[in-house]
Image 1 (cartoon, helix red, strand yellow):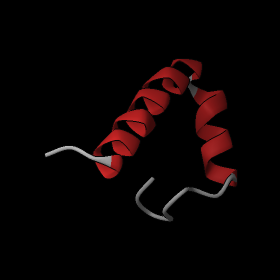
Image 2 (tube, helix red, strand yellow):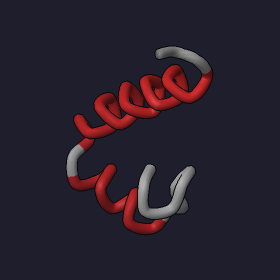
Image 3 (cartoon, one colour):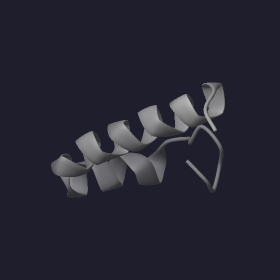
Amino acid sequence: MSGPRVEIKMKISANLAFFAQFGSEYEAYCARSWRLIPGVY
């Protein structure tokens, strides 16, 4: 099963893993910013 949805989910997961290295700074950013899909991503 592949397609645009799977590719987008993989890209989002890769981005989240990258930004997680910034620790509390990234967590603070997430707390004050909108998400692609509120409550999900």
